[in-house]
Image (cartoon, rainbow, N blue to C red; front, side, top):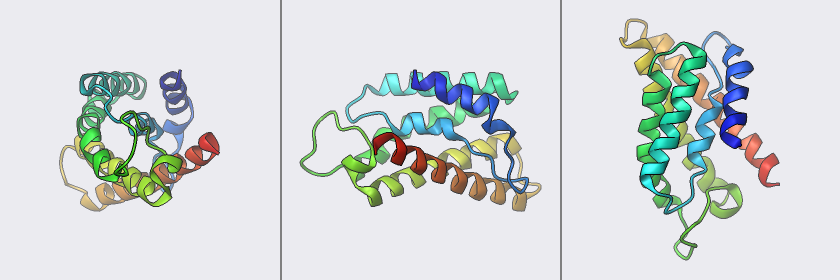
Length: 157
């Protein structure tokens, strides 16, 4: 259900937002952030690839979102592990309440930054205009992180 909501929101609304011609919210990354601890790695990869492929079909970016989502899906268990409290449950779900605000913010920034770096590198496929490339990565990372934190506050609050 959440998969479909993120996909529709991205395809119909968020893809049409380009703040200052460099910042596009890529909210569908939030799905990968929410996979609980000890979730099967193959399932994370499958869900990440499927969402990326669906986003690619709506945005006409052949393989860019799918490749980037698969990358962060592969990295998610390893990036999530250092933020987990020592005495936590085996099926801990990432969130502000479970990880704490600071840890969740850092976890979100790292994941979104990796995603934006991969996404805009694949989309550009060269560094001809590297200033635009850096602005797109930083602008989209900031905008996406802010939206994820707002949604997390609404969803968990």
